Length: 160
Image (cartoon, rainbow, N blue to C red; front, top):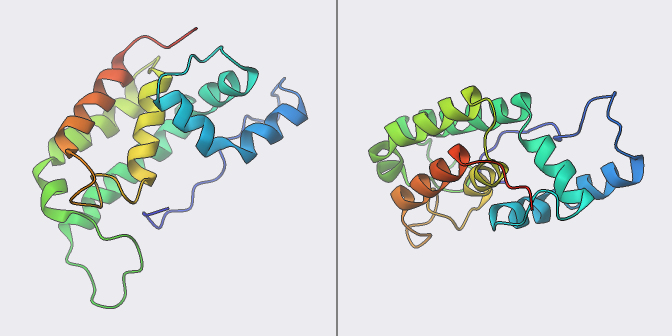
């Protein structure tokens, strides 16, 4: 994970009705399921995708993602400590240029009542992809990616 922030797993609470085997499969394949959701897989196309979509769209899970985006902007504003930063290098100038869009995304992750699971999965992938536009100059257009994530976050949840 490029940002050195440890997230607790996005598992359902103790009152979850999901069978233990399903919860374990989802935990073991969370990144793959996130990629499928981000790619447009319907949330109800499998029990695993349905549970994963429910996990990542929970308010607490979205607040952790939002906090990570905010910390990313904070880190971009500070000068790196030579030889002490073991994280993936940030594209500081690009992040600061897109600061308003990143912070809007963080705010909406916290505040939207029913965010699109695809948008939440895309936001997670954006943060965790060390080869992506937050970290790699050849990782794509950060502005365009932020617009796509924002659009999908505000879109209706996928159901097919």
